[in-house]
Image 1 (cartoon, rainbow, N blue to C red):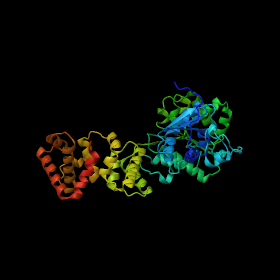
Image 2: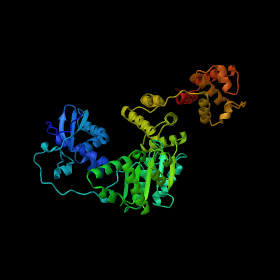
Image 3: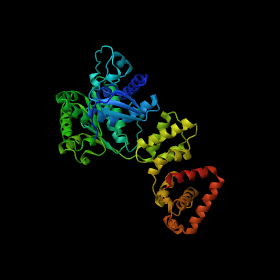
Length: 474
């Protein structure tokens, strides 16, 4: 079991203080002033031990928080300074304290006291704007202008717009947004905050995750400053809590949130909450809190459709000034259906690969670069799915796959579907024929042969069929 004791300083290289100052400075820029002062300001550096940078914090609580929330980013920033650093070890040292000198304030430095034996007199601390004291940093990418609207999210989008334009409107307070991972809840919440901040700059907006709400409440209990916690939080004009499901099972925190909720709503302040389920389905929340959450506007974000996923990819490619073939985006939109975050991540990876190696983004490239993601989305294809996908691709009715119609604009897609059924399933020719309107197995044989001939003679047609195959293959 780890023992939380002081750590002996390790011998630093001459430029170590400058490297640490740059690491802290970049981290401060990324997370924002309030978050930095809350969680990271007390970090000190003991030194470098081989491939490991040793960071000290004065309490176990802060150590656990920094490890869990900033450990990976600290390591990445250190690698930028020194590629030899492979690990970050965050430890507790009771005598660790940040240097708050003028040099430290300017360079965002802060070595352990033993590494900075002489320093100028400390200067007065600059207090952050109290109106932003409770708000986590907002992502500048997440605005209404960059939110791609489609049928699965248009209602939630309209509700968020209404709250942004008229906070605390009757029937829209609270606004409860719910949906699966990566469907746009956080994007909409940030969009609301940005819009209110732009239109009503004097309003105090507090945006945070439910996890951060809980940790701040616990910190207030430990420091015996709960009254200050209550007064500060209840002075905001707009309270936004993301991922409320995190409070399930945390009875004391739920109670505090319930009282804060009531105080703000009674004072005519706006509350916006997100979760992965609707209030009625959040088992583990107190009934009184669940009832209060459902008394305003509840809007869900459904799973994305193919059309919405394609629109999102096109918008992201334009925003990144990247040239991506539409066939590649169609391929991604068909294959990656779980959530938008993973879809965007796949596109970003492809664009980065193309930029690094100077290669065109093709379907073959996508299959190679994204094989881990695509493997997770693989599934056994069925004849019904083939028929549906081909019908959508050629803009014909699904019933045409088994109808007696022989017009070319129907017969050719039907032959393509038979060809793909033969290539991608283990079904026999007679069984495939039965699924296409009880056709004879010789009809299926003719379709397979005809499509193979057309693919050899027409490269454009071959690419079309190949795209469909890649979208469907296991």
